[in-house]
Image 1 (cartoon, helix red, strand yellow):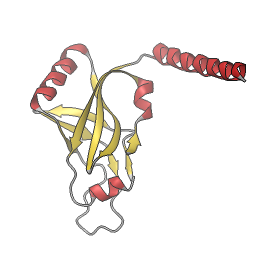
Image 2 (cartoon, rainbow, N blue to C red; image 1 turned 135 degrees about the vertical axis):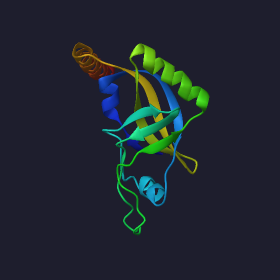
Image 3 (cartoon, rainbow, N blue to C red; image 1 turned 90 degrees about the vertical axis):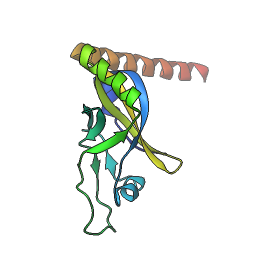
Image 4 (cartoon, rainbow, N blue to C red; image 1 turned 60 degrees about the vertical axis):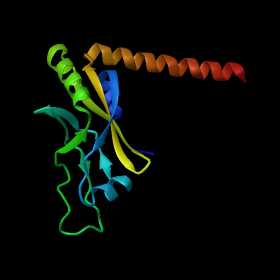
Length: 148
């Protein structure tokens, strides 16, 4: 079940490659995430000393929690294999890529994050994408009316 999506990522970046990563949550964060109190709109991913972290991911504190609730926007570690981290780190360093979170979802009982290796779009690329979406929408509407 998808808990949060980053729709802005598809508008701002060309998505090259996707990966599923576990996320290290503590305390009542899991209950809050499963209740849907999560936002990844302004979040981003960094590789620091061969470990991968997600920054600015906002998880609202669990309302029935206690004084041990953790800060809302703390840095959280993502769980990936060393080989995958090293591969993506090499691409980021040499080719101007970045890593963006696309969605947070549950898989069985675990909370997972889908991250993507992405390249930034220029303004004219964004305009072109919007034009294509508009044209596709119009074609589908015409096709739907024609089939009636």
